[in-house]
Image (cartoon, helix red, strand yellow):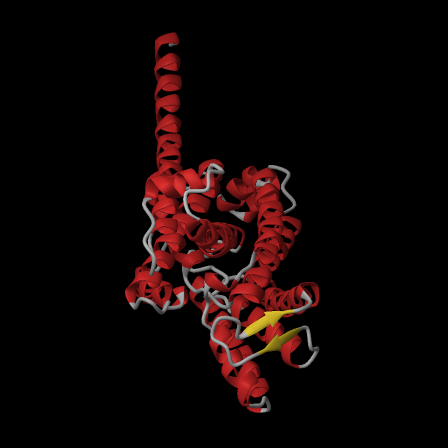
Length: 356
């Protein structure tokens, strides 16, 4: 018996060590891709010089300006936004018990986009221009974020209401999300109809999700919200594992399912709101990354949350780098590539009709 217990413990340690290895490998790969992403663009910089510049050495004044003022903020924004969108997808899929759950597929991103557009055009929290580089400038990030969060929470409340209906299938919830997304997309179009030419072109351009528009200040705000949400989600990882076994099982283990579900969706909506408010709508990252990560580390949220953060950061950074290089010297919005990647995956998951 002792041999069997020791054998089981040894296999468990080996199993968890393998998952940790996957995550650490992803972190190393993310670091390498980040350096290469900073090095590539309309002006190529040797990777070693990038490392030297980041270490504080001035290799070239021009390169120093490009790295610190242009590329590093964009790379860090892609990492933080990708991690945030991915972890919200994990949490939504768990607490709603819906493998198709993500901010984009449930219509939360579209609602947040309407809130941000309403704040910029009606409340005057931002300014618009005819310049592609700064089509929309957020003058009051707090008002913009709050407006985006309020409308995102409206959709969240509707989704939570449907989640309490017994027998509500994942497909029905997705249809609800599609309906809410269409509603707020129509609302955004309504605002654009009454905008002048500059406002119209600026808002249309802004809806294309792009990491290049974030400054150091905006990156700091996004990082603060995403970081706080990750701490909250990590502290509740065991509760998400319990909910995966079913609401009744979770309640039997002492988990207040309704409270966990409400606060989880609240944090997920806040993360979505601030990312959409500053970067626009970036679709399908929250849908794809959790399923990709499950293939490697399984459903245990002790590893799934961290693994999805790394996967989301890596995926969005790779997509952002590719978008930057495709039509140089111009940059394609990263949301275009994530949509091309996400749409086939979304259709596959609907046809499969079960958890991966």
